[in-house]
Length: 116
Image 1 (cartoon, rainbow, N blue to C red):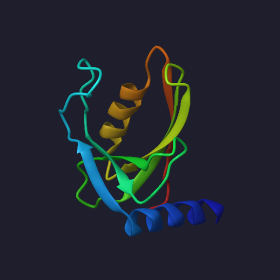
Image 2: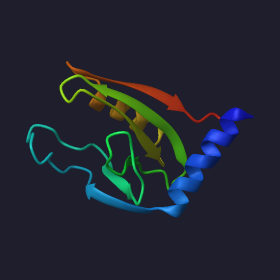
Image 3: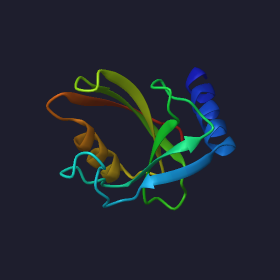
Image 4: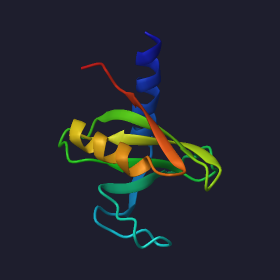
C-alpha cells in the first residue's frame, strides 16, 4: 500500500510538470567530453531536487512512457546524492543507466516499480 502511494505521488509530480530534455541521447556532457548520454536526459520544470535544481529524469524508448523506477545516486566527486526518475525505460535501458552512473567515485541504487 505504501509503495502505491509513493509511485502515485511521483506519477502526479511528472503529470504536473513540463519535461525539458537538455541532453538528448548521444549528446556530449558540456564539461566532460568523454561522457556521452546513452538516453534522453533532462529535468522537470517547476520542481526541486535535493541539489536545489529541478528533478532529474531519464527518458527511455518504451512508448508507454510510464515511470519505471528511480535511481538513487551518490557522487563523491561532486559530494552529492540525488534521485533520478526513469520514465519509459526498458529493462535493458535501466541496466545501461546503472552502468552509466556506476564509476570510480559514483554509484547508483535502483528502486524499481513492481506494480503492473
